[in-house]
Image (cartoon, rainbow over all chains, first blue to last red; front, top):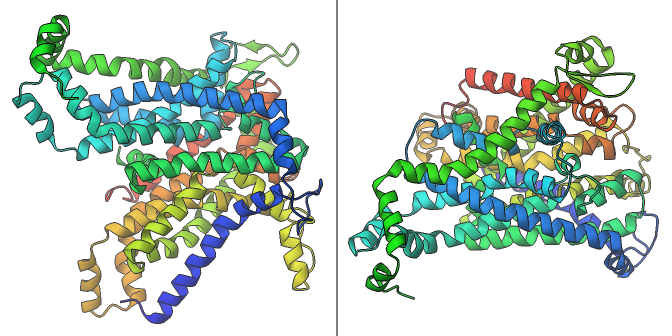
Amino acid sequence: MESTGLRVALRIWVALVLLFLFLPILLIVIYAFDPATVESWPIQGFTMHWFSVAWHDPQVRSAFLLSVKVGLLATGVALVLGSAVAYALYQFTFFGRDAISFLLVLPIALPGIVTGLALNSFFTFNSIRLSLWTIVVGHATFCIVMVFNNLIARLRRMPGSLAEASMDLGARGWQTQLYVTLPSVATALISGALLAFALSFDEVVVTVFTSGAQNTLPIWIFGQLRLGQQLPEVNAVVSIVIVLTIIPVLLAARIAGAGAVSRTARAAAVQDTGRI
Amino acid sequence: MTPNIADQRAAGGAWSKISAALWRRPWARASLLLTPPLAWFLVIYLAALVVLLITAFWETNSFTGNLERIWNLGNFGTIFSTPAYRSVILRTVGMAAGVTAVDGIIAFPFAYYMARVATRRTRTVLYVAILLPLWASYLAKVYAWQLVFTRAGVLNWSLGKIALGPLNLINTNWAVFIAFCYIWLPYMVIPVYAALDRVPASMIEASQDLGGKTWRTTRSVILPLALPGIVAGSIFTFSLTLGDYITPQLLGGTNSVFIGSVAYDSFLSNNIPLGAAMAIVPIAIMICYLLGARALGAFREL
């Protein structure tokens, strides 16, 4: 239906947008191999030196370990709480159901500075010292929606006849859950967990307000960028982080389909928000 | 792996009793499932938002720096009577509106191509291509533009090649603007694509049968039907720009003070009440924005 001219124009537009999206990220990876200590374009040669520097930097190591620890703990909490809500909202219809799903998306729909400042004031108000656990609490709060969105979408697509058949064959309620429902939603749980981990691993806006003396990897990067220090090393670290956050997302897309990744992206959150 | 149900029934007497009891009482099951997550959200998250709201009405003793729990509107008074803060709010809203408009213009043809022109295979590839930058590290995306705009960076090198003078965008609001457009673009593309994808082909055919050319069909049929998606995307680009403080700090200059920056600086200088009041400003703006969009009927189709 579209004329040839329009199609060509659209194609050029799409190509330009793709270049716009990918060139800047690619640039960091290219700079990571630049032997020069002051960045200028074009790069001066090729070296793996900065990766080795990053690898042997104790600060980077401890920040990386903290990020992994926080990510795993937050994902664990999100898995338990997120799947509990998803099951409850799937199985029962009750007053205030929409309010609950609205509440769940609030932490990622509100600007990060709001969530961050709110959590910080809350911890100060209750005289809770900032530690690893306050970071986990903050991250878990916005990771729950990742697990929830993925799981409830899968549950809604699952035919009810499966559970009914299991009951007809004499399985108890918990047996049906354990042997029929759980295996068929397992991939949704895994992809939800992967996305939750990716989100936590990359988080900086809220973490600034919930971490005390500890540095997660994004906080370390932010600190270096702000001071403009050790930028070649930062290039190497950031390149690794890009790869590390994209792998879980690709895995999640593989396991549960590309739709799952976008559903859990914030886009779905706003559409839910609009509905209320 | 098939469980022997008879064995389990014999073995797990207590289990079965609990299971049966819960099965007979759906409400018990529902509350068992809902209590832990709801408690988490009420005790931590909602409580935190309430504390933030209350803190905004307290003040910091300017002499001792201690938090004084006296109710007053002083922080909001400071924000709205100080010209510097007023211009910060105006600058932030202007930036958010500009970013939203530009992202909408970039995203619509892209989403249109994905939904209506591309083959199934290309569509999947483009979808993943949009999702990857969405999930790539936020700091990396900001930092990438620092590398582009810096004095000896790619931009000036390219401009030099085509004999154009150096353009020092780093530490200006333009750098912040371009980076915002870049970072939030996927948040606009996805909902617009979802909306365009839902436009029934029969509507477009009907428009063409009635003599509507491509432009007329787009304007009178596709655009109104895609409006909910555009609004959903704009909520993101708008809200995320309103609350950001990291991008202006890394790319902006002395003039790049936004709502988020003021809130963050107040937090750093331990004037949390002022920061809290400043953080409430974007919430208030977003509520107005959502109500406005709702009044325009943007959510009716969602």
